[in-house]
Length: 87
Image (cartoon, rainbow, N blue to C red):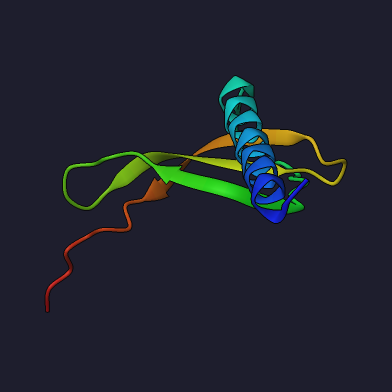
């Protein structure tokens, strides 16, 4: 097996693993955050913020790995980050 074939096989393997992780994130049922929840977050995978009108509270979702390596999702409210605060 030459280097070109090995490189192509490696590329397809990496892309396949990425696709599996993306599908797994979509299949996770999110937990809605309540004040005082004890969160077990080992690594944050993604944070998606909803669209709001102007400055204010928007719904957000964080996808993360817990200490066992399982993918979890958390819905929570946050202040919109793209607030045009001119002085």
